[in-house]
Length: 245
Image (cartoon, rainbow, N blue to C red; front, side, top):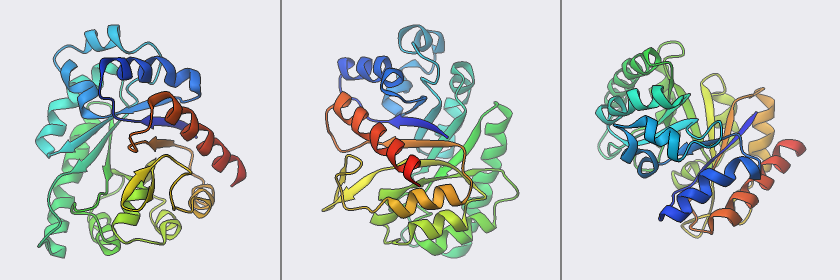
């Protein structure tokens, strides 16, 4: 398994810390938030020259938006060597019926083929308030996706927010499409640094081991904690969880 970090930055200094220290701390890659790469979309060489000091600096690009926004980042992703587009499909879950979700699944699967043409893989990031939110939505959506057209990014905190308590069961049920993890802790309505919230990660790590997963596991650190402090704590937490499972 390879460890990644996804963490928003709010200043040039934080961004430099993230890119310069992630490899030293023990991560194999970064899964970038949109503000960290959008300024470079038209100039990937500038991104590579200014920020890509270490391999894996753009192992994945996260797109919170529409299918058209995914298409806009594909040339950049190919140029900087991204392996994966992690897609948070920003459509409201409100009012959607099963047939609506099936139609969305077909559209996203077609997009996955386009992403594959750029040498990357598309991974759907389920999300509170988005089309794939409730437990039954996962079945409806992925039953409509042919083959391995797209993968699934499992986000622990968004499972909890969406009322899905059996995270380990979902991981086992969809192990055949899971290609990325976003581990995020949660308590009192807020995201927390891994290990400081109320999520029990022991069954999660056990399920990851049970399905024989060997891909990316990313700390999706959105607690607002200090950059280096959170980087170290999340890396240590994930390594311990993998080691003990």
